[in-house]
Image (cartoon, rainbow, N blue to C red; front, side, top):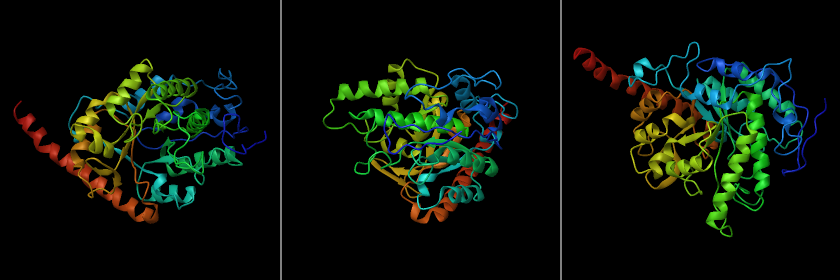
Length: 385
């Protein structure tokens, strides 16, 4: 089977010949990859006609995939072997550890293989992998082989993965994040998101994350909204990986309330979840950050974590903003969410290893503080019985 690379991104560009591998998992979501039946995933080989699959029914000689609804439920409220349901408890002592990851957009100056190695060696359990020019570019020559190699690398390192799609200049060298699902050229963005979903399937990703984009001045609000709903619906039809839509400050959908409106407009599909950036909660949302977590607990499929200040969209290292993290981590653990909680520091690549080392140390300290704070409350409850 041969490989063919796309000369440039666009709705007519295709990649063929993906080499199938079977990534395996260590840790809490060990059953997720097996549940998906990764040995026969289509991924990039399925992009024969934009929006359509080459083999819509799984061949008889390999297992089919479960419904996206089942995958979402596994990430949110696992019931599988070794994954006790803790969604009804508020005691972090009983919930097990959170799974911390790190975003590769914070390692932009590293080769992807090297970045994955550093992240794993620091003790992270997963990565938020942003598809970009130097990090698994879906339009590069040999993309299919690269996907297979990265799947092997993730497996060997025992790293979980979510796929992020926020590369700044991957589709247009002149305009940041353009085109989006709101632009006249929105088919190019949709083609990229289809490819991201297929790569996510090949990697055994827990979610594929995306956002709306900033509304172009020439596009009326009602037209932009209709385009967004249409694009999300088409991506939902294509994707076999849970989708995490991220409310992003300054974009057409920037708050949890905006996500709920979009979710309703799509008919509340099970595969359409939330990517929640903890920093954004402090930046824009009216309530305390732990309450933001609780408000979308049943829809969480991906979590990004960073510090931030009220009204300022700047991703900061822990301790440089205004967020009290122990209550936030306790809220995440108590929500039943078992996906990755990945550090999101896209402007810190110049010191990536040091920043990543500081970040995991501070997350562990905050998690320990959350557990310590729960012990007196639990003891008091036990004493009152």
